[in-house]
Amino acid sequence: MSTITLDEIQARQTELATLIEQYRTQSAQRVIEVPGTTVVLQAGEHYAGSTLEPEGMVKHDIVLLAARPDRRMTWQDAMEWAASVGGQLPDRQEQALLFANCKQHLQGEWHWSSEEHENASAAWHCDFFTGYQSYSRKSYEGCAVAVRRV
Image 1: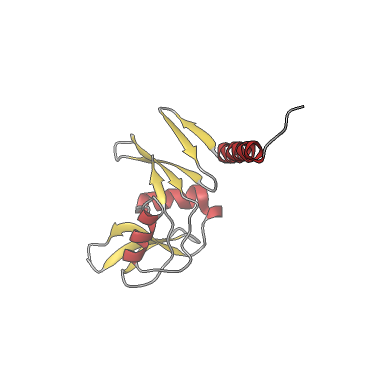
Image 2: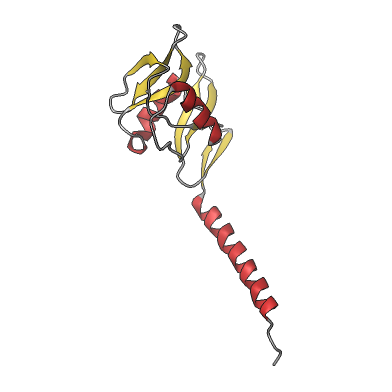
C-alpha cells in the first residue's frame, strides 16, 4: 500500500471543491428557448418576456436580475446602482412586462424607470402594486430593479 501525502489530499480537496462549485453553478441555471433566442437565467433571475417594436417585431427579451438595492434612492443613484449590478433600469414598456409576468418577484411599490420625462427634472416610474405609471422628480427616493436585455 502506498503512502498518501498531505499534498495529495489537499490537491484532491481543491479538485473536489472546484467540481462542487461547477455543479452548483450548472444546477442554478435554467434555459428558456424563444424562437431565434436562447436565454440563460442565473440563480434568482426571472424571464419577463419579449418587448416589441411598434411594427410587432421582437426588439429584445427581458430578464429581471436577482440583485435588489438595500435602500430607496434618487433616479441618478438608481441608474448607477443598476449599472453596478450589470443591468439597467427598465424602460416603461419593460416595466409593464415585468408587472404582467414577474409581479410575484417585485416589491409592491413604485420603482424608477430608465426614461426621463420631458420635464428634465423628472423621470418615469411604475407602481408594481397597481401597474400605474407616472413620473416624479428625480431627486425623490424610490425603489429600483435592474434588468438585462437579451
